[in-house]
Image 1: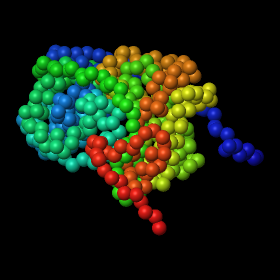
Image 2: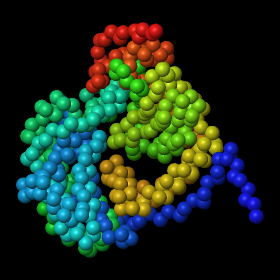
Image 3: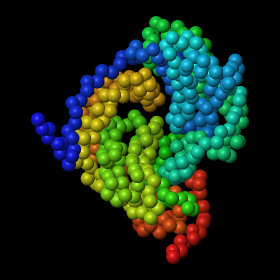
Length: 453
């Protein structure tokens, strides 16, 4: 018997779609008003507990960037009852993990534990969450120069999204213990937190435990005034000199859409075609056809306020200007013409398939549920997600592209060797190339001309 060889010149057809059954969510409140969402999953003896808090860098005091991130980082650095070492050893002894992190829009605390140890692990989690350490430690952190500068240039001066959420060396050094305590008192508490519990538990077993550990967390006055939504900023082309850099980091984009936009699904479908997967237009052009990069991609970063649409990648120095031009050309093509019916179907089916496997583990379920309270999405949001995805039309996608992807409004930020890439960027015909320092601030600098030979 002979088996016919597959025709590798033809893209394989999609597999049948999997049936998706979303887990039911049991909702309750502790005596202090803290919302608790519980999803039972008894396939493995483990539990994930996530606290989602509305106190990300968006709420930083204007002159104190990094406050929210540092406050979140300090939550597991010790409490009144346990110093950092004792807290870490207690969690490790249970075979559990405990992490806290800050983001642009929210702060997150996550406990992973075996269900048999939940009685010992939850009090440690509650202790870290509801008490702020008196320690302050300053940590070295790597910075993405190009992305930090890009965000600074596409958002107006003073807006939190235009600042590094981790702060700068000077802003962190200037923070005092009272700054952290004040921020914690204003923004942490049951009134701005949702607790999500997923795993081998039942409401009857876990709610009394949570009530004992967190029911006495005091409800504090909450200052939750967001800054005004970002105004439009004039686009530009910017260059950060990195002498001797073997590649150029390129960022192209513009503020686009918030997470609760009705355009979320059409924009997600569009991005997958443009730069959100290996076979996207941007990657196939710049990597496969031209060899300018090992990989380039685009994304909509959906935040409480309009987050950026961003194309990014590392490119060969000699082709920096051409690469930026090709990125803008690919964006311009979807801005003017949308996508094809074949691209729509391929993108849509890929997203449907990804959705089908995104509710399998406790971590995945907890991560998906975090978006609902943080971004004000309805409780039944995921119930109708697939139906909305299946109904996305070419007109829907073209409408989003026309509204938010005008390349004429996009900024280009490059971190690379200025003497080798500046002329190519100037040849894009988008105005003068403005030099930036490593922090994204504009500088006056003479760039030497590279002498060959």
